[in-house]
Length: 272
Image (cartoon, rainbow, N blue to C red; front, side, top):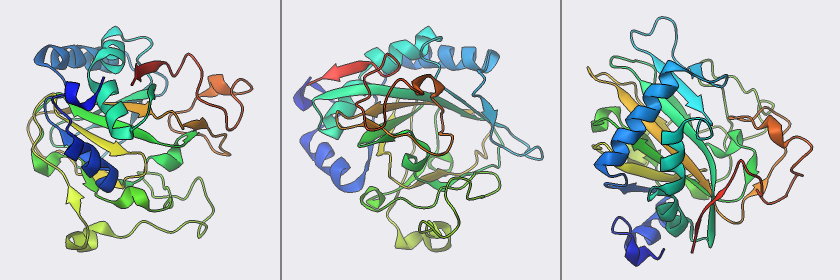
């Protein structure tokens, strides 16, 4: 599918994404697909997987729940991950001849949740090298004060020290071995921070290295998000000396370090 066949994406959008590492795409999902996503998220919340976690503290008046890798057992998530416009938009933004699904990630912040998602890059937590993009898709209206925030242009920089979200520990690399993230909140005007008022089915696409975070959700409703992650053709399996998020234990002894991501867990979902 060419960019011209995708009303959500223009050549200027593709150039902006390459420059900024972030792009808001309005109306990525149809209303029917938004309903499908809601159904899938409801099923996940009713029957969380072993990878599900509560990412908020016990004293939080709200609740922040996450779950990963559900497309193989939740049909609604599979339909969207494999057959919505998301793979084609990902392919155009990544400028790649083929796109593979990497994984899905559901994030739900209940109304009143104080827990913010700290500033971070995704790449250090993953078991892949190369290029990829995330589509962060809310199925509820998200005011800008509760929206994901991203630092435009930060995907050009190196890895920053990944830390655990709740206690800020350097779990993956020894202290001092990677540069720390800047204190973005201390001088927000010094950074090109992108966010928006989003309607259900809108999406924010961003590079795996783009620095991003999110506030709590100080509103009455929920903020339910389906994040779909895709890999460019240059993506390669990266054996890490740490447990990745999400983990892929099925690949141990099966997919060598540096190998293309040719495995049923990562199906090809788009070709140019």
